Length: 317
Image: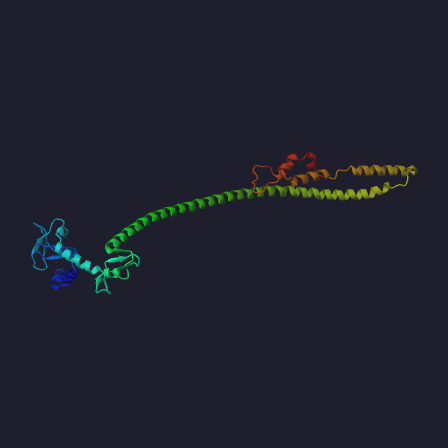
């Protein structure tokens, strides 16, 4: 390995690892017909500026000796690679990639300690790491590469699963929003129907209430008059003994009794008021239950009264 390290640092060898066009280390070195070697990317750029022969096709002139090289049909890509230079590049990169140990005279750290998670050299292994779990750097890198590939594959699987779960979650959210909208629409429709029924029923009840208030006023007026008439007639019936009545007193008393009896037979609208009260205050069975929507085709209070009340009730008091 020391020989290879010296070989890669030898000036003559190092000179052959540099491209004359880009003056950098060769990258994919390709051979021209004259034997000179250049980077493929440098030859591609050079080919863009060259003329194309009508007989031979594209031709590249060597930047070093000016000798022309006829390119194959696919261009620079079919030029042969310089294998010796590639070999020197691989050896040089291998030496440069391998870290060295600063504690043991630049020994190569080509052993991996799984216990300490560090690269060590062979002398380090014989010393402080003798009882640790170790692997060669190639074994470790191969195992690490395999773990990395497995992690990437699992990541792709988990990512796909996560995307599917997120998609299903979005669908469930859409379903919930649709269900909520359906409930809102149904509630609004029922509320609108309730408001319409409320308006119709209140309008009908207001008409009936006006009639009822008028009848109550008449009833109160008749009741007041009836009370006054009785207040005048009843005291006239007071008599200590009926046996003492005779002549004009007897006639007057009999007339007073008949007058009181006639007053007591007077219809002042009591039965009509009872019917009004029955129609205006519905029974528990006929009252709409909370949450129910009364049918808009059902009869109103005023219509029920018109249908149920007898003709005598509708007559003015």
